[in-house]
Each structure stands twice: as C-alpha cells, then as structure tokens.
Image (cartoon, rainbow, N blue to C red):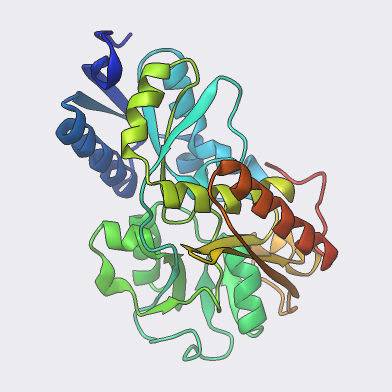
Length: 334
C-alpha cells in the first residue's frame, strides 16, 4: 500500500505512484506527467510498470478480444488495491465509460492529433503501387484507407510503436499508418513520410491527448491534478468521446470524431462512420477484400463553454450520423 501524507489543498499528497504500461511510448507519457508533478507540485513520484492484456495479445484485433479496456484493466486494478495512485493513458485507448469507482481527473494539452503515413520506399499513400500491403488494425483507418484506395491490401498490425516499425522494416508491409503524436513524442519524426490531414483521414476520438485516471474517491488527487488540465483539449475530446459513446462506444465500429476550434464562432465537430458490413470485422484478421466501404461524414458547429455543451454537441453529431445511415451494432464489443 502506498503511504501518503494528507494535509490540505494541492500539497496533501507528498508521494504518488503512477501505473503505466511498459512500452517506450507509455513510459514517455508517464515520465512526462511525473516531471510535471515534480516541478509544479513538488511531489515525489515513482512509476509502476505493468504489462496489460492488450500488450500480450497481438495475434487478434482488439474488437475480437475485448476492446480498448484491455490496455487499462491491469492499471485500474493497481489503483484499486493501492499499489498506484494514478494511471496515465493515451485517451484514445480509454473506453468511453470508465468502470464504477474510477474518474478521469485530468486531460492534458493535445499533441498532433493526425495520422501519419510511414513507409521506407513510398512518399505518400497515392504513390503506393496497386495491391500494396498497408498495416493497421484500426477499423477507422481501414475503412478510410479502403475508401481512398480500394486496391490496397490492408493487413493486421498489432504491437507497440517500436514493434510496428520493426515489422515495417522487416518488409512485412509496404506502408503502415500510425498516430503522429506517438512518433513525435519519441522523436521519431523522421519516420513520417506524410501527414494525413483531417479532411482526408479524420482522427480517432481523443487521439493525441493524455488522460490521467484515479479512483473516484481520491478527491485530493482530483483537485490537485486539475492544475495539469488543458481545458480546450478536455472540452474537445469530451465532444469527440460523446459521439463514440452515443454510437455504442465500440472498437468494433469504424468511427472517427475530431474537433476544430474552439474559436470565437464555436467548436466544429466532425465525425465519420464506416459501414461495418462492407469493411467487415474479419477485414483485419486476414487479407482484406477489395470492397469499398462507404463513409457517412457529418459536421456541426456550436458554442462550447462547458462539459454539458460539449456533450450536447457530441450527441447532436451522433444523431446526424444516424440520420445519414450509420447503424449501431448492439452486439459489438466495447
């Protein structure tokens, strides 16, 4: 059990432990939060490295084995039993609804939310030869890639960032698609051949943002960690994640949601939905068929000044998706 000194205000925790996955990117993220807590709050911070089930199961897509929660479940267990005080996550890996007893205490300023095209021999997606093999296990990326280049072969790509790059370098793929944020955080910008602008490939909800999770009864931490929060990012990802929640919150559904703004004119939320029937969950289990997956793409702009308005915007955009033909599958995995 971690020992704490409970006083008053933001200094009531003198020593905290951060639960983190052990991949190089996850450790970078945890070290980033550790440095901020030490410099801004004067806390003593230790890391508890853990391997999650999501890190261990690499031969199947997340949609087949339990969804995004596989990356956070062991970390939440460490919070529950007192081995750790907080957990740092890539927000796009965090399920839309946290389990009872947990709270999102802070969302930090977003890194580049876009997707990156990575290839050793081709400069852009358009430059790939017909029938080229592209690696991704994201159904969102799969559907968008197939809409852009129906001739491509999309094959599964699991593992941490270094593992994915190694598989590319071994020649298993002609190109892979990764989050730009992770590459930039690890100073691997040189591996990026091209950036997909949101008009071409809309990012995942919460992509590029870090979230800090704690037990819901740790009001001391919730109050203190608010000092690390970036409110514009938090409002933006709340709107995005609300779309996902309203559509079923499942990694089994090809869904993108991304905000632009906020500006004086409000926040614009865009969302895209791929047809799971034409992309198919089996598409990332083996070589994908050449069927083009149709996209439903919508956007709406509104003033967003608080979380309630962010959620209302997300709900409205989800309704627009459904009106455009997006269909929620009740048997999808969360």
